[in-house]
Image 1 (cartoon, rainbow over the protein chains, first blue to last red):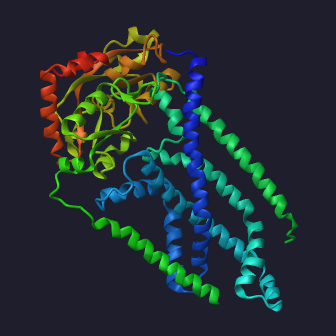
Image 2 (image 1 turned 120 degrees about the horizontal axis):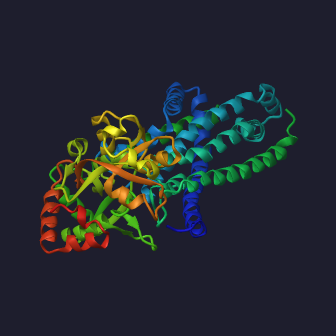
Length: 229
Length: 267
């Protein structure tokens, strides 16, 4: 049995490796779902019926089912039903599957936030653009988009902070993120067994990280203050 | 209006592309005539699903997987002429992992229960094990028989052999995530006792472990460990011949002595 001071470096090392995986999943999810969400929100607002119906159904299915089930389906469905395990069994395959499930899930939530933001910009703004002789594209990028960004920062920061903690769900497909790393010391790993404190200690990582994000979002909000709405 | 139309067309193309990407890949080599053995040989690697479970599968200081099961698995991979890869899995999802071909076998001190035998192709038993009742050491004297334990609140791993024992003996029990959590419940006093594997109890509780105030008293029904392959796999026969050979030449005994599990070997 190792003493506490001997345990510390081992546990820290292991939690850091786990947190890196958490962070990677977080960043990849954001990078994928922020643009994909915009596409889905355009789809939902489209006047072309099949597209808006498809987008709305997608959003309904994804928001209406637990992320945990989506992870299991994305990871196991190709092998179980299509008999072609595209992801493979190793850590990188599990990461890709998790990233796909997270991107799709968060894109759907983001798309609804975008839709609210776009539709919340007063019609008068677009009319003003038309009067000034701007094209539809110019109106969207120069008038609507910027005002939409200001409106969506608070709900987006909410979702993004939720995402930080939702990444822990990925351990259902054995992605070794920080909670997995913390739990491994309960059962026994690297000569340490029966320790609960590493699991609880993972909370500190989440807390610090979401603290940093909160500060960042406040800065962004301040930056966007020049829009009077 | 133009913008919207362009987006609409783009989206339609994207969706169709996504559909094709999804289905396109399914057609290749899903051939029922290829045996599991051949499939693994073609891949050139045997993917073994494990959890961190001392002394069967655990990591040494350099992060290599060792243990009684791990070492034997390496020998088996050599025997069939492929490389080996260990993958940590969520134990609850082991059948899905096998059927989905993300792993090729589970080799992790798995108790051969009906549920396991029905959903996998299982090897001959290679180890024997028992389920034991774990109680705080200072109360051990009072709980020497299953009857004495009737009033205790038990913690058992969900879907485990320990849970079956609790049910068979009519104990009151709470299902928890794994055996480590069950021990945690006893250590923190939220449950009075736990039922876990003897091998695990030997390695995890008592003097010199994280749970020095716990001990095990009653030993319930004994059971055996086996290796699980995909249902219908011909790797089972390969394993059984391999294991018989290695028992005959003493290799199994040697590996078992390295990890202190020789008492549990099937004679």
